[in-house]
Length: 365
Ligand code: SF4
Image 1 (cartoon, helix red, strand yellow):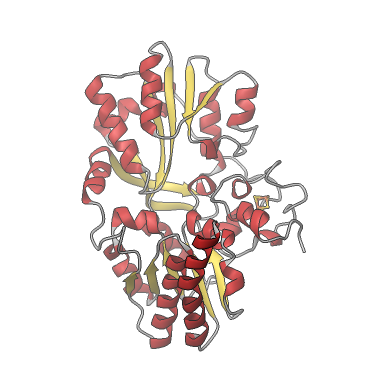
Image 2 (cartoon, rainbow, N blue to C red):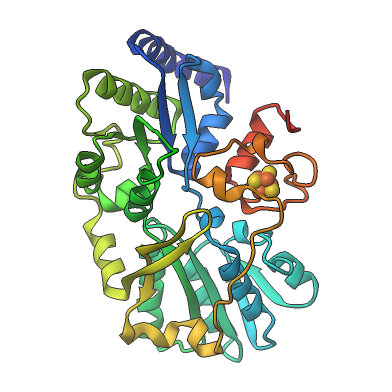
């Protein structure tokens, strides 16, 4: 950050930090459920600016982290086919499955390419009609519209050598599951900014009412996050939980209806397994019957086989906000960003990776 930027940033954040400290009347526990929030909170040292009575917990907001081992294994099984090119987001490359990762598969001769969007994968498929290009479709409501648009484009262009493994998940159902955890005890929820841009802030209203939970939609700059936290503390103090949209420059009440229609055209809700949370009813997106010709699992005759989490890895508990990374016996010893054991240490949005990079604590206490 340049000096002038830092000065401007401090001018905005300092009053918010002071107001948060002034407003706090009791200890509060607040969860953020977006990997980008997690990374931003750590990168900008926001925890260190806050009174110790505010506990910030990270939830299941990293798409790579919540993708369970058996799905990673399915991607690896596809990578093992001679005729298949895996075109994947880079974050997924080093996530360990039961036997290696896409990176190790590539080192052993599999064709694995990094792409920056599903459309890039479609371009690759057009270039290489003799091969089957498979895009591991992970993510939340944020990435699902672009994946849907790519499927529609493939259909329009008659590209038959492009498939996906549908593993996208939707956030509201996961939040319901989290709230059913009797050990969680959260007072407020910092709602994910990106997901909210698609589903709209009103999507949380029934949830907030049902659980009597303060909710604030926030952006990703330090001032955005602090404004979201201040909103939550004021709601908690007043005993009037609601949904406040503190990210109005990107999020509307109704969300992006064009993106919602795209998702609905191509995908339908399905039960989906989440790492740490188990299978959550109707929390995933599967291809509608008319688009199943783009289903890589069907085209390759693959099935998802039950798999074990890496031994000793506590990613599941970290994704539920039950543990801190330093509570994991492998943190900083067997598991580091260079040699990750669990996905939370791999992903740019993973809590363990954020903790390792920015907390200054490289070893377990
Ligand atoms: Fe999993 Fe590594 Fe995090 Fe432990 S430190 S929970 S092994 S990612």
